[in-house]
Length: 70
Image (cartoon, rainbow, N blue to C red):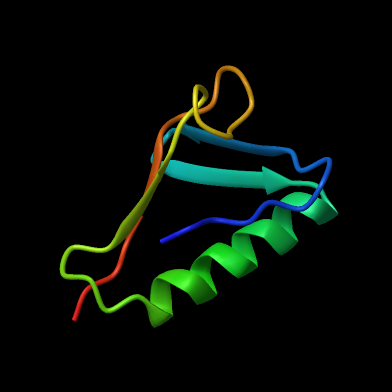
């Protein structure tokens, strides 16, 4: 699955006190929407998206894994 990113995207994920907060600018939200659509259309068993501060998230972000279940 190839992920497409809108120019200038910013995405941050934090987890504290049992809450996960995903914060993103407009380009980040549009990019995530595209990723979710791509994941929904992917028929590969175990399909998932793994994002972290070394792969697309802002520094200091908590890892984010989005997986499709069938």
